[in-house]
Structure formats: structure tokens, C-alpha cells
View 1 (cartoon, rainbow, N blue to C red):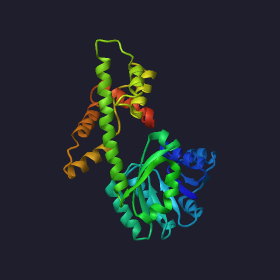
View 2: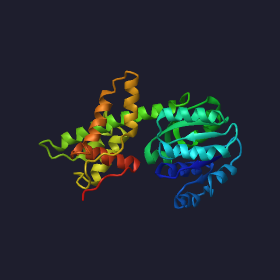
View 3: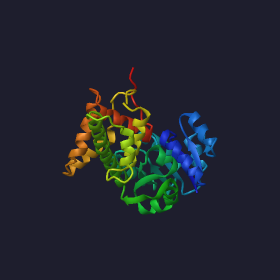
View 4: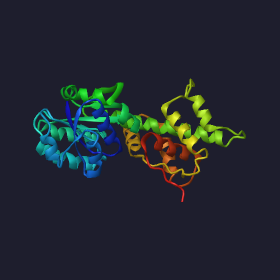
Length: 299
């Protein structure tokens, strides 16, 4: 199967390498040619334009978009649409507000084109070696694109969750849960760090991750970050991000779901931008471990 791919940032590049490893053919286009050249050197086929990319695909064409939410997605779709035909499929794989996906799907359906909104989780490791995908959109389009999802995800790691918008709705809720989990780990490690005992926090993370009820991939990554910098003294407690969490909170409150812990975690993330805390450092360092997200270094 041959798939088009637009957007070769950290996640996009790793997904392309994952697809190539699974023996799928991938045609790529990216605004920055150097990023395109890197994946072409690994076996992808490059295109000089979006029109050329579409011309290299057979119908029904499947084009995966992995760019920043909002206007960048709309801009790419506006350039894609004239080069697509009835029955073609656009996969919207980045973090996106689900109502934008519903709107885009309605616009594309007027042209006979499908849109699948795909919540992509698992960080850089997942993108490269097996992601977790929640997929919204029409069943007909999902069945055509399913071999792509099967190739790029972990075993049992993809699900068609419902109609248009549902894939990204599930993903923003997932991200909200992640906020609360990160905050809980951060506060727990701060309590250990401030205790009267001289504790090896990285070793505690390792032992907790072997059989305890709070074991998780995030815990493993927190331990890894602390092992590299035991006092997390090289970074500030500034925690970035927050967009998907705010979307999740807003939608939960619209449906009268309390979301109290997640809302608190979001507010505390904002708080880290005002004053320093060890909890914020743990969250910032762990996000860097799983997604390569930027940490703010001390001057």
C-alpha cells in the first residue's frame, strides 16, 4: 500500500520511518526540504509539491497530515483538495480540536472526500515503534485505511471509535488524564525529595515500576529523567503545553463532567510559569523523556 505523508516534524518523521519499516511505500512532502531529505534517505519517495505527491498515489489516495493544529491544517487541506478525487481519504493525525475535524469533514464530504481524525498517542517512541490510535470518521474510509493503522500501531493499539470528531475527542480526553497522572507523580516525588530521609528517587521509581499498583510508562520515564539529573537542577520547573488539556476541560464541563483533578493539574501547570517547584520540574523532565518536548534550562 502507498500512502502520502505531509508534515515531518518529530512525530511525523518517526511515523514515516515506522511505515517504511513495515514495508509500506510512503510519498512525503514537507516545507523544510532538509527534513524531507532525511526520510527520503531512509527509503521514502519525495515530492516537490503537494500536487506532485498526490500524482504519485493511486486511487483511492490516502494522505496523512501531521502538522500543528488550527490554520496550518486548514492551509494544507485547501492545497490538497484540488488534487484529490471522490473516494480519496485525508488522515488528520496531529492534535486537533475535535469540532475543527467535524467542520473539515463536512467540507470535504461535499467533494466526495473522506476525512479520518486520528488521535495519535505514545510519544516519539510510539510513533517510531508502535503508536496508539483512536480513529473517528466513516466506516468505509476506515476500512480502506486500516492497513496503515495496523502497520503503525502496537498490536491491539488502534480503534475506530465512532463518527467524525470522535477520534480527536477521545485523544484530548486522554491528554487531560495524562495531565493529572503527571501532576500526581510530580507531587509524590516532591514529597520524597523534601522528606527527612536521604532517598534515591530514581531507584524508588524503578522499584515502583516493578509490580506496584502505580507502575506505568510515565513512572519509568520520570525515573529516567531523575537518574540523569538527580536534583533536576539543570532545568526550571516551567511546564509547557496545555492546549489539549484546556480543550478537554472545556468539553468535559460542557457535558457536566466535573474533571476536577484534571482541571487542577492544568491550573498547576500554568502556575509553574510563575514560580519554581520540584513537582513542575518532574513533569517538565518527563514530558521531555517521552515526547522530546522542550525544557527550559536555567541561565
